[in-house]
Amino acid sequence: MAIKKKSGAMKKPTQKKKSESLFLQMQKEIWPLERDVLFRPDRMKYVRKLIPQEGCVFCRANSEKPSLDTLCVYQSKHSMIVLNKFPYNSGHILVLPRRHCGDLLQLLDAEFMDLQNTIRKAMSALQRGYEPGGMNLGLNQGAVAGAGIPEHLHYHVIPRWAGDLNFFPLIAETKVLVESLEQTYEKLWSILNP
Image 1: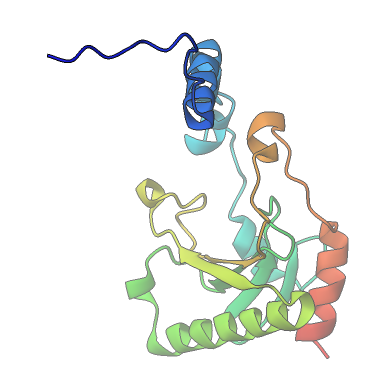
Image 2: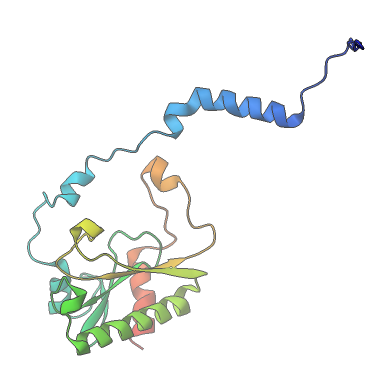
């Protein structure tokens, strides 16, 4: 049996082992912070509708002429486009039927077709005004699906750009937008109402 001679010099750990060890050490030190749940009990009032609202904000926008006050930027025969009061990104808009209806399947054919055409018009306006790299389009039907105002259908249309998502809204409870609602309103008004 051959005996291996021990070298007097210790082998240096590889760079990978050093970085793994440093990573594991960091994980032990900051584990509770990085994986903690963000609790927002103040949102419960909004989610549970504990803050009373008088009437439907969308029906109010429908009953008046489009204006910055109602955030309604466009109305067709059966649909309208409204700025989101609390946008996720600049240019975040809502497209909805003018009639108070919370179920897509209850729309009349004319209302449904007008709504779909208005969605295309909204996306075209956002493309023209913002030149985004992409867009999110979504409908949450019903409170359990996440609809903030489940009684009145509304599609969210959100322009997106590469790198527009970061952790600032989570750590600072602040969303950075590159323009005000007034600027968004003026931009989209000029495109949608030439």
